[in-house]
Image (cartoon, rainbow, N blue to C red; front, side, top):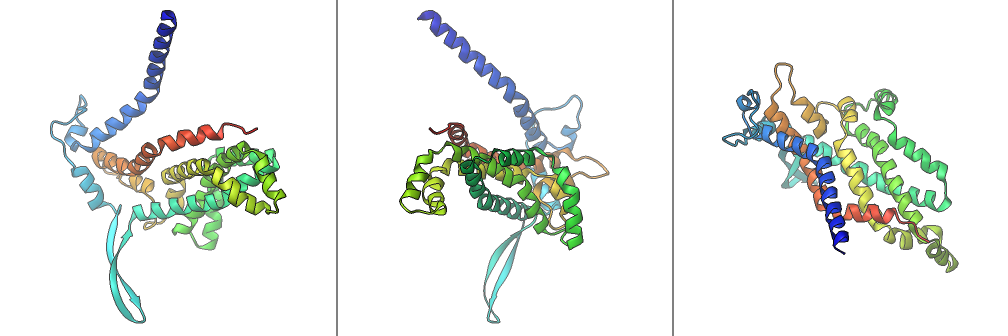
Length: 298
């Protein structure tokens, strides 16, 4: 019994060290980025490097909002029947663009991807599932050139519509692939019993399969939103000056004259913060959903 406890202890220590070895590079980069955002440019360019400043400053974050159109808040009048009834705050800027594109692409991906995942899973269309996976792992640059030519021909380059449509290339395969695993894990007897009772396949999907697949929908929503929010390549090519998303806005902090590491790190932290908070708050749902999706029903 004592030898068994010792082996278990060493196993836990080995597991903890393995996790630390995997996480420490990313954690170190994040801490260094945080340090850059809280230092002035003199400390950021000092040699040897100064990891933690003697005096913390939030000036880099202030510069990001003052010198870049990250967020704008204007009061807009609500007019009806030729009369102004009230004024309401209208959010604008790069944050607004990212919210519209990411939430829109995620919502449309769920609308089309969840039923598609159900159909592929129940019809056992493995070739279609493989095609979805190929679409997911194909680099975005492979789609970018034909999509850019098409939107340029339609005169839509520079608006939010091309970004929203191209982000579906990212979000739809994620949703479909995740939902295939969940719907394959549901017992077929549930849908068969509903069909015997006179329900249509759509009713079986809506009232039986969909509520049971809620953990998968949560996971698919989070993953699709994260990948859409972080996408850079589509935004830098298809967006205009007023329709840039936040990752592109971080890139625009760079200048030809110099690299201001403090504002650049502050902008990167502001872009990363929503995704980081979402991941931390929903980590239990993500783990539970992915685990449930990996268990096949009998």
